[in-house]
Amino acid sequence: MRSHRCTRGKEEDDTVEVTFFIEPGNRTYVNRINFAGNLSTADDVMRREMRQLESAPASSMAIERSKVRLEQLGYFESVEVETEEVAVRKIRSM
Image 1 (cartoon, helix red, strand yellow):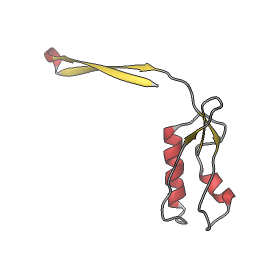
Image 2 (image 1 turned 180 degrees about the vertical axis):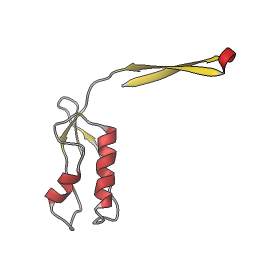
Image 3 (image 1 turned 30 degrees about the vertical axis):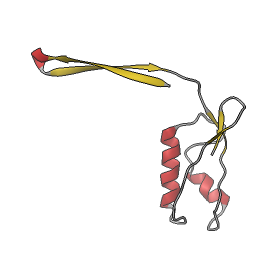
Image 4 (image 1 turned 45 degrees about the horizontal axis):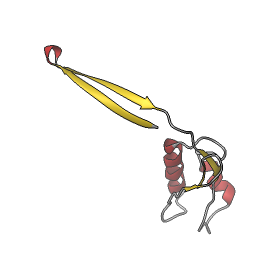
Protein backbone atom coordinates (compact mmCIF):
# COMPACT_ATOMS: atom_id res chain seq x y z
CA MET A 1 0.00 0.00 0.00
CA ARG A 2 1.25 3.47 -0.83
CA SER A 3 -0.09 6.67 0.59
CA HIS A 4 0.59 10.36 0.32
CA ARG A 5 -1.05 13.43 1.76
CA CYS A 6 -1.95 16.85 0.55
CA THR A 7 -2.29 19.77 2.96
CA ARG A 8 -3.81 23.17 2.40
CA GLY A 9 -3.94 26.00 4.93
CA LYS A 10 -6.91 28.29 5.31
CA GLU A 11 -5.86 31.61 6.77
CA GLU A 12 -9.40 32.93 7.16
CA ASP A 13 -10.24 30.48 9.96
CA ASP A 14 -6.73 29.26 11.00
CA THR A 15 -7.35 25.65 9.97
CA VAL A 16 -5.48 23.15 7.86
CA GLU A 17 -7.20 20.71 5.52
CA VAL A 18 -5.42 17.36 5.21
CA THR A 19 -6.37 14.85 2.53
CA PHE A 20 -4.85 11.35 2.41
CA PHE A 21 -4.68 9.41 -0.84
CA ILE A 22 -4.24 5.67 -0.27
CA GLU A 23 -3.42 3.27 -3.06
CA PRO A 24 -3.95 -0.34 -1.97
CA GLY A 25 -1.23 -2.83 -2.83
CA ASN A 26 -1.10 -6.58 -2.92
CA ARG A 27 -2.22 -8.26 0.28
CA THR A 28 0.40 -10.34 2.10
CA TYR A 29 -0.53 -13.41 4.14
CA VAL A 30 1.29 -15.16 6.98
CA ASN A 31 2.12 -18.74 6.05
CA ARG A 32 3.66 -20.17 9.22
CA ILE A 33 4.75 -18.74 12.57
CA ASN A 34 7.94 -20.38 13.87
CA PHE A 35 9.38 -19.94 17.35
CA ALA A 36 13.13 -20.38 17.89
CA GLY A 37 15.24 -20.40 21.05
CA ASN A 38 12.40 -21.16 23.44
CA LEU A 39 13.49 -23.34 26.35
CA SER A 40 11.09 -21.88 28.93
CA THR A 41 7.53 -22.78 27.99
CA ALA A 42 5.32 -24.85 25.73
CA ASP A 43 4.60 -23.83 22.14
CA ASP A 44 0.88 -23.59 22.95
CA VAL A 45 1.55 -20.91 25.57
CA MET A 46 3.25 -18.70 22.99
CA ARG A 47 0.65 -19.36 20.30
CA ARG A 48 -2.23 -18.29 22.55
CA GLU A 49 -0.52 -14.88 22.94
CA MET A 50 -0.28 -14.37 19.18
CA ARG A 51 -2.63 -11.81 17.68
CA GLN A 52 -1.22 -12.38 14.18
CA LEU A 53 -2.64 -15.68 12.99
CA GLU A 54 -1.31 -18.13 10.43
CA SER A 55 -3.02 -18.03 7.01
CA ALA A 56 -4.38 -14.57 7.85
CA PRO A 57 -3.49 -11.29 6.14
CA ALA A 58 -0.31 -9.80 7.63
CA SER A 59 -1.01 -6.89 9.97
CA SER A 60 1.78 -4.76 11.40
CA MET A 61 -0.49 -3.90 14.35
CA ALA A 62 -1.22 -7.58 15.09
CA ILE A 63 2.46 -8.48 14.75
CA GLU A 64 3.52 -5.71 17.15
CA ARG A 65 0.78 -6.63 19.64
CA SER A 66 1.90 -10.28 19.49
CA LYS A 67 5.49 -9.24 20.20
CA VAL A 68 4.41 -7.16 23.21
CA ARG A 69 2.29 -10.00 24.60
CA LEU A 70 5.19 -12.46 24.27
CA GLU A 71 7.49 -10.00 26.07
CA GLN A 72 4.93 -9.61 28.85
CA LEU A 73 5.03 -13.35 29.57
CA GLY A 74 8.38 -12.72 31.27
CA TYR A 75 9.98 -15.93 29.97
CA PHE A 76 12.30 -14.28 27.44
CA GLU A 77 15.15 -11.76 27.58
CA SER A 78 14.08 -10.41 24.20
CA VAL A 79 11.55 -11.10 21.47
CA GLU A 80 12.56 -10.49 17.85
CA VAL A 81 10.32 -10.72 14.81
CA GLU A 82 11.79 -11.69 11.48
CA THR A 83 9.81 -12.09 8.29
CA GLU A 84 10.79 -14.09 5.26
CA GLU A 85 9.03 -13.81 1.94
CA VAL A 86 8.22 -17.11 0.25
CA ALA A 87 7.57 -17.59 -3.44
CA VAL A 88 3.91 -18.58 -3.30
CA ARG A 89 1.23 -15.83 -3.28
CA LYS A 90 3.24 -13.32 -1.24
CA ILE A 91 2.97 -15.38 1.93
CA ARG A 92 5.36 -14.61 4.80
CA SER A 93 6.76 -16.85 7.48
CA MET A 94 7.59 -15.39 10.88
